[in-house]
Every structure is written in structure tokens, then in C-alpha cells.
Length: 40
Image (cartoon, rainbow, N blue to C red; front, side):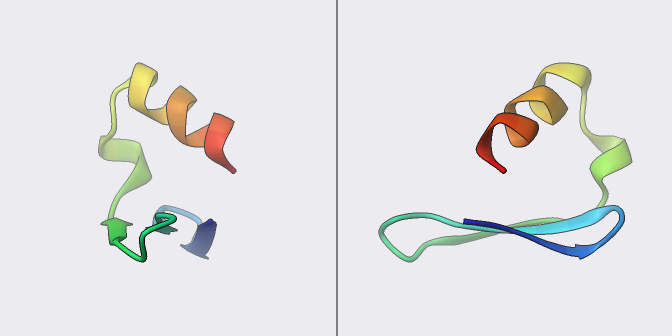
């Protein structure tokens, strides 16, 4: 699951319950941003 916390901040919750926070979407490279878009 991908949850938008703010326009640039996201929380990803994996199937096993692990949580990953992206604090600044603008700081990601283009490939990482594209991968995030595929998830959500």
C-alpha cells in the first residue's frame, strides 16, 4: 500500500508490515519516481 501523506511525502507499507517513508519525492531520481508511480 502507498499512502500520500503530503504532496511530497509518502508512506509505503509492504505485505510483511514493513513501513518505508519517502520524505521528499522531489529528491528521488526519475527511475525511483517511476517505480513509485507503478506501486500506487
